[in-house]
Amino acid sequence: MGRTDSAIRKRAEGPGGSFSVEQPLWIAVSAFRLLTVLYAVGRYAEHEQHYVNQVGAWIYLGVLTAWTLGTVKVFWSKANCSRRWLAVDLALVVLGILLTRTFDAHRWVVGGDVTLPTIRAAGSVLGFAVYGGWLPAAVAGLVVGVANIVEAGKPTSTNVHNIVLLLLAGVAIGFVVELARRSEETLARALEIQAATRERERLARDIHDGVLQVLTLVKRRGAELGGEAAEIAALAGEQEVALRALIAEGLGPVPSPRSAADADPDAPQDLRVLLAPLSGTRVSVAQPGTPVLLPARAAAELRAAVGAALENVRRHVGEQAQAWILVEDEPEAVVVSVRDDGPGFDQARLGQAEREGRLGVSQSIRGRLRDLGGTAEIFSAAGQGTEVELRVPKTVPGQRARNQKYSQEGQR
Image (tube, rainbow, N blue to C red; front, side):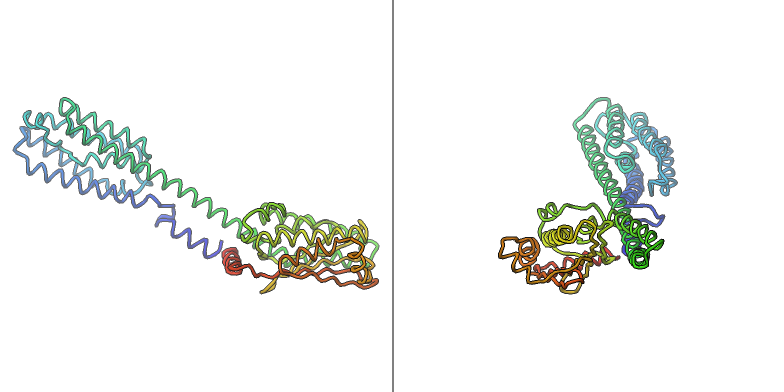
């Protein structure tokens, strides 16, 4: 994995090494519990005279405060917290709500006096929201709401209003947490795909620079030597084709030339992906180990022109003809050469064929390149085979910058 992958992962991970998109919410819940328990103690101290059992109220608040302080680390992250801790916290809050009816004077209870834990109860609901999402938060909110109604003796406008607010807050935060978790999963999958892609491209470069070149050399030299060496050359050729096909699969799905052209015509398209399927026992493809980028339409047209050149080889030289495709990624253009081992021909025949209405070269090859602002040069001589050189400039406005950005991202 490259430096960019590591940097992205470090930004997405917390100190413990696990993804922590929701970690700030756990910290907020822990801080909320501390602040609200202090508020509950302060509010009771201010209204202590309302209570008929002040000692019992102080004991409860002491237990609630000690529990809250003692579980700060527990509620600091999901790794430490569990449903059991959340359930005990909720039970302690509900107990305080119900004890309010016993400890507080009846007239204050009927008058709508706040409960002993007061807004500390929201901390329990928020804990369930951050831990499990909106549904556990809604259940916890309903439990707190029922306890408030029991404490008041009946539903009132005040406690119904508080219950609705508590439910809305818990459900909203729970929904945000679920979105955060889905974002975590998406980011994790993206990082895995990115790392796998980088590794495949690295292996493709290594294979291209080493193994494929050796196989090509063995195939060529073995064919020249003949005899048993020719058999070894044939095996090397088969392995070269299989290995190139495997590399092509690692580069990604191969779009058809038509689908590539129908997509965004200015979107960068890796020409290697389009040319890789042309490789076979009679066709050798030599390409760079890094993406060769052209606008999608230009890449599709160039691939079609290469296909037309190979068709001419099969038609005029024969099915057993050997052809070689060489891809060169120059700063200003992409050059693709198609060469065969045929007998060659007199180039004057090209003009004669065009006058006779046979437009394979002029339209399928030169016409395509001309439409792209490129050129198609054909070199041939008797007994020396034929070479077609196709040159497509990288001149689409803004394309060079997009290709450069894409290539840099692909090499990180």
